[in-house]
Image (cartoon, rainbow, N blue to C red; front, side):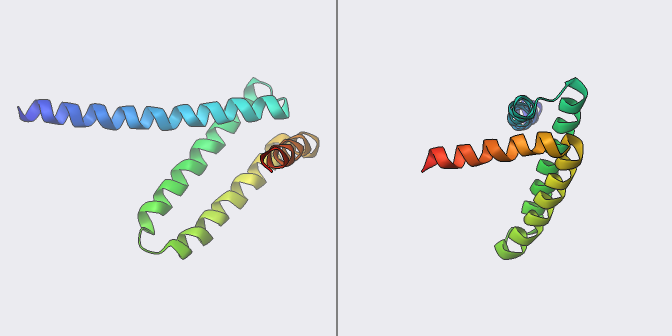
Length: 109
C-alpha cells in the first residue's frame, strides 16, 4: 500500500513537471518563429526559458511570505533573461520581438 502511494505521488510530480516543460517548449517555439531563429538558436532559447523559470520557481519558494522582495528579485531575473535573449538574437531579430509584443498589447486594448 505504501509503495502504491509513493508511486502515485511520483507520477503526479512527474506529470506536473512535464506540463511546465511543455509550456516552456511552446513559448520557445512561438518566440523562435517570431524572431526567425534557426535550430541552434531555438535550442539555446529553450535553455534560457527553462533557466528563467527554474530561477523564478526558486525565488517563489524563498520569498513565499515577502511578495515585494520576490517582485524585485523576479524583475532582476527577467532583466538578465532579456539581456541574454538580446545577445542571442541580435538587435535586428530582437526588434522583431519588440514589435510583436507591441502588436500583442495593442490587440488587447
